[in-house]
Length: 346
Image (cartoon, rainbow, N blue to C red; front, side, top):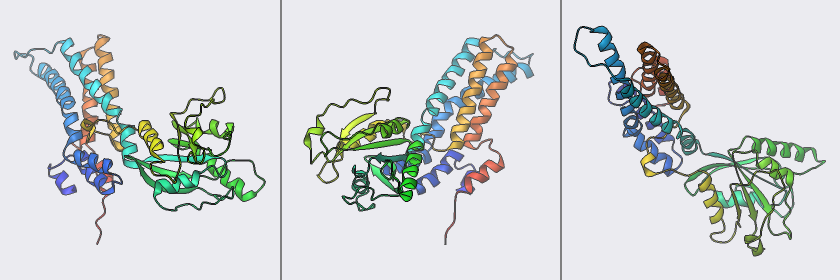
């Protein structure tokens, strides 16, 4: 792959797609990597690159050959090209979070009171008995992690110890780890025991869940108490509404369907047209961000009536960032860092 890149057979985004395809842990991630390997990201950037090259080359032509009959670029024409470039780069930058989710999965913490059904949920999603489940509260004393595919979304599940006040030193450590897992999660599933009447809702746990970018209130064991499926819930005042409120059970066929749908609504896969054009790593995101910032500075300079060389400087900087992304102008250490992720095994 490195030889292909150095010989101009593929750009750097296509080379990165090879390792993404090897490392893919879901069908969606593999599909995106295959499309990027086919030049999906490069094709989306080509109009931006061509517009910036056209602007800079015509500026230089006018300056270097003043005696030639070269038509000046009109400010409105420049502005239109820069605005199209900015819109394209901005839309591309918006795909970074979805690309990270697709590639790395969603860090998901399952929290709740002891014996709420957290470990049963983990086992049901994993498809085997990953965590010990008993009727004794406090069975889980440490975090238990497992990677599962929930619908089309890759979840890095963390089953946590039941959050409650305890004098047991070991349980206290488990509860503290549970809190830290929830605080660093992209998604928190707050599990409430639906078999109780009324279900016990811990305000402290809900407050912890609302700090996550996404959170779902999931009422467990609805096979034991069907009334929770239609129950009306009133959250404590001041708490952010959940992304979804669903009931589930870990034993009946289809018992997790509503929860799976809720997860997918939090992390939509996007349209088929997006395949291959998602930014999937920090290097790509940084290059697009720097290019977008430079294009916006060029637009501001143009609107402020600054001299053409000020616009030219920013346009060239935007072009340089895109060149880093595709590998056209990437420094040797950047190229080395990309290919250091490849390993030739025996």
